[in-house]
Length: 151
Image (cartoon, rainbow, N blue to C red; front, side, top):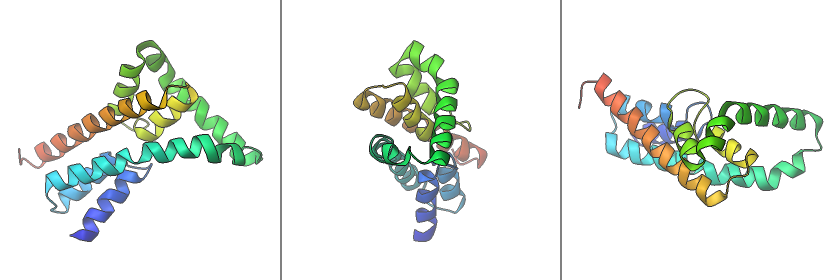
């Protein structure tokens, strides 16, 4: 049980799944849906400050490496291309909706990179990401429970 919760939390931190995978994993392994929701939401929320720390501080030290620089520019261009129109047009609400969409390529990792690239104020970006993660997690929780016919 503890191992399943830990794995759900790790999925929620992972860029390969976030809470979109952590919540269904925990529920499908028989854990309490409220505990899973709360744990995965908080774990996914912790990604934003870690990403911002990495982007602001560590990123500049790794930029001189050719491979890292090419990779970072590629990721930044994709984040800007995929999200900039809606975020620049709608600002806070655009970032929140972008993070909220429970589809691949959106979420707190992409939202953090987009906020950094588009130079959105950290507090506003954190709040937009937090609200987006909450609603995304709620959508995933509801869809998981409905698919199991437990609602």
